Length: 182
Image (cartoon, rainbow, N blue to C red; front, side, top):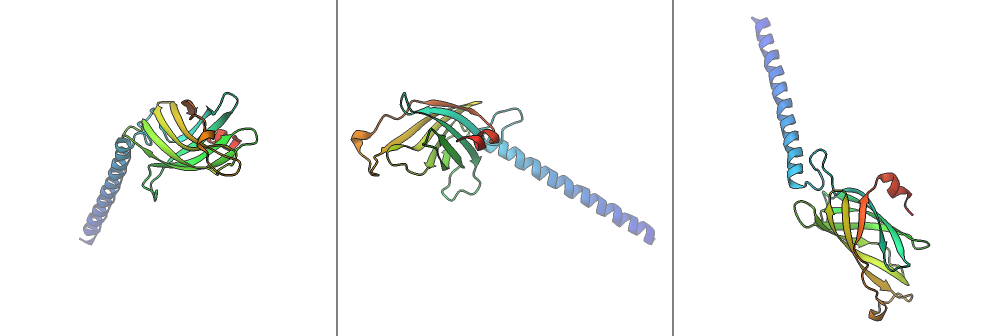
C-alpha cells in the first residue's frame, strides 16, 4: 500500500505543479494583455508601431539655423512627477550641441497626443528649447517646440524673442543613430 500511496502523492504533486505553472502563465498573459489594452502606445499589438523608442528629425529655428534633434522615449513606471514618459534628448548644431533629459505626459489613451518637458542646459546667447508638444501617428511624430532666447548676459528680454519654430517631423531611428548624434 505504501507504493500506491507514494504514487498517488507524486501524481498529486505533479498535478499541483502543472496547475501552478498554468496559473502563472495565465497571469503573465493577463499582464501582457493588460499592457496592450492600457498603454497601446508603449506595448502595441504585434506588427503595430509604438511611440516609445528612438526618434530623429530636424527643427528649423530660423532659415539659417536648423538643428538635428534625436530623442529616446521610454515609458516611465516610477516617475516621481507622475509622468508617463521620460528619456534623453540631443540637439545637434555646429558648435551648439546640447543634450539632456525630459519627462512628459501622454494626453490620451492611444498616445496620439503628448508633451515633453525638457531639462537641457541653458545656453546664454542662444535659442533654448523648453517643451515639445507632439502628435503621433504610426511612423511619424509631428512636434511643436516652445523656445526662449536667452541673452548673452543670461537674461530674458521680450524684444529678443523669436517665434516658435514651425511644426517639424520626426521619424523612427535606432540606438546607433542616437549614440552617433552630435
